[in-house]
Image (tube, rainbow, N blue to C red; front, side, top):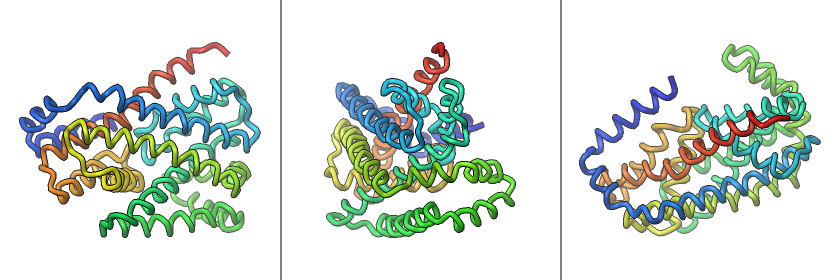
Length: 302
């Protein structure tokens, strides 16, 4: 169902933006830059693997550096899920390969996504000092409020329990709420102050590498809006997609990024071409690596 939705969206997205012009734009794309673009994307993923290692150590899950990186990459196979929460499949992998209970490791992906939000908002906040875009500023302020409130909830068990108990009354959230209820101690450990700072610093490095990959995509189309503006447009679009809970942010990310590019004077068909390649270099590249690695991870003998 998700695959059909993705295909339908991209067909409409490309047709609406003029398929012939997009094809022409793609012919002008400097494909020699593609290996460099993918290299920066992969380095970003590699760096984030160290964040996962820090979080696992906080809940006394000890695996080798190689196993940790393989686990992280394997989890990327489920990026195309609402808010990437399907990456909780890593808890299944940890149980199957190493015997750790799912309830022990379940908070891992939840904290990783929370860290991603903090990092994106941090980078956007810094970038908005230099270039102000009203819609992005409003989004950023709202996200800062959500992050602060969420962190307070994570650190106060009574408040957390009340919210979880309320969530259990909602059928679609019941299973998730049950898992989080059983995993609170792990969530509490992973969101401890020093751990959050370490993970935040790693996230800054990782997302900066991804920002370079995205900037190179723009340059490959001979479009240079400047590194800061490119970050604001791409990261705000990714943030819009993430909070929508649409699988992979598909649709909202593309439309919001295209809209911001058109406002900057980029032709619609060219903006569409840029965003398609940006998504290829980020989410689709990551998902492909995830599928390849997960096959290796599951087939490897214990």
